[in-house]
Each structure stands twice: as structure tokens, then as C-alpha cells.
Length: 220
Image 1 (cartoon, helix red, strand yellow):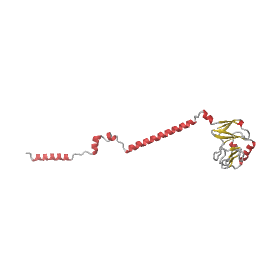
Image 2 (spheres, one colour):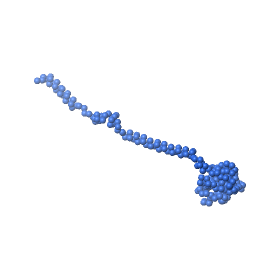
Image 3 (cartoon, helix red, strand yellow):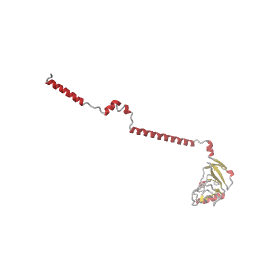
């Protein structure tokens, strides 16, 4: 039989073992996850994308699309700009018209086709010139002197044959001033192509032109 001292020793050992059995640590959920899937910084968790990651990817994709569109638009604009500086010779030639002034009698008006638009070349006589200069100081609707509307000799006036009211083509050597008259709505222009009566707001436009010599006019 065991002595009292031995029994006390056995009881202490049993009590200690029992406490250890009932106080064993139960593994937490995070421990189990780590055991089966590895650390959160690798494996299963490393390949998971958060909502922030998805939003960031979407933003980068949208930005890439915008940049691509902007780059394409820039390329098209550059190509269009370059094409304007490299027009073929025949296109440049078609933009200009040469007029033989010897074919226009004194006091008459010739209509020239320039890029699909009518241009009036007026070979003015002395009285027609005098009428234009005489009215320079009047309070005109669209104030311009005769000299401001001419390039070169005073006997030649070159204007675009389109009424500034609604774009009709005036008839020549008609109207109250014996020069240009638009019968559509009654606009009268004088021998300098200035609006004098009717609804037109502006004088007849003067297109780009130059005189090569006394007999040759270039329009355009």
C-alpha cells in the first residue's frame, strides 16, 4: 500500500494532467485557414482581388481608352493639316483663273467662273469711275471708298457676283446706279459694287486677285 505522502503526490499529478487536458487551446479560424491555405500574404489570399483593386484596374482601362482616342484624333488632325500643305499642282492651278482683259470692252462687265462662283470683272469708263469716286464721302451703309475696293488701275473693278443679302446672282449694268442689281429682293449696288438701296447689308465682296500686266488678271 502507498503511504500518505505517495498518495498526495499521485493526486497532484492527476490534478495537473486533468487541468492540462481541459485547458488545451482550441485553434482559431484564422489558424485553420493559415494551416490549410498558407499565410495571407501568399497562396489563396495573394490571388484574391479586393474591390479597390478592381476599381483601380477599371480606371486604368478607361484612361487607356481615352488616351487611344485622343492619339487617333491627333493623328487625323495632323494628316488633314499636312494634306493642305501638299496639294497637287493641278489642284493649285484649278484654284486660280487667268483672265484676258483685252476681251472685255470699255464700259462692260464680264462674268468669270471661279471655283464655281461668279466673279464680275468691270471695265469702267470715265463716267462710271467718276460716279464711284463722287459718292465716296456719302454716309453709306457699308462705308468704303472706291480706292479701298480696287487693286491696280481705277478702270478695273473685280467683285464676287453674289448678293450679300441671300446669295442671289445680280444682273449687271442694271438698277438705279447702272451697275449691279439683284431682282430677287431689290438690292442696288453702285459702280464701285457698294450697296446703296435694298436689304443687302454689305458691299459686294472683293475676291483675291492681282494684275500680272495691263492685259492679264489672275483671280485666286
